[in-house]
Length: 258
Image (cartoon, rainbow, N blue to C red):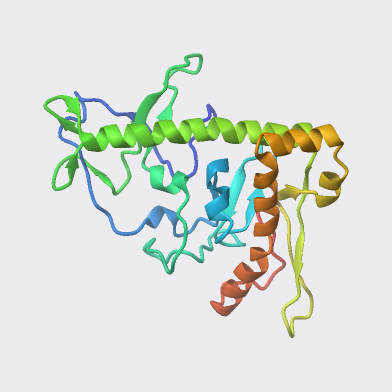
């Protein structure tokens, strides 16, 4: 989840360029209020290090498909984000996932068969400009303090992504993930709203783990992550209520496309 897949670009990224002291010598990092790129996004990838904080604000679910990743739900329907306004400014206290804070930078493999990762950025992002006011990305041909800080953050994110992949592999090996479904019946509604299109940990399968399997989860700290996910699912109904109050619940039967 940390590097650009061969078939396309990750969420938010329109283009990727390797950051270069020769081509981007005068580029600056601008201070931009809000994150417009986030305004119409309802689900954002999470790393396992973030579960403890994120579970206080967001339902944590897992995407569908062969390589699922953890997601923080900011809305229950595509195009709906209840935590930022149309300008991408926070509407209240929350935890902002590292995936969002990393943008428009990321570490990526420039050659598919290479193990080397290079610091890249999205040149279409508001936060980066070819000139003007802001923090210089290079000073005298060398990475600035701002750039070194960005690189360090991206390296930490890459490492967290590897630990997250290991966690997801453990869930898959133990066959703990199941298709999720949440039915919410608002007062006066003729039928419930049913949300699908995501995965979750099965509490039944969790209880049926052998003693050695459960012990391994406890010893490596993964059981705490599982319960952070399970506890966070209660926030789905709170998120639905916020959407209902804001008039952002569609009339037709919705499917949560995580």
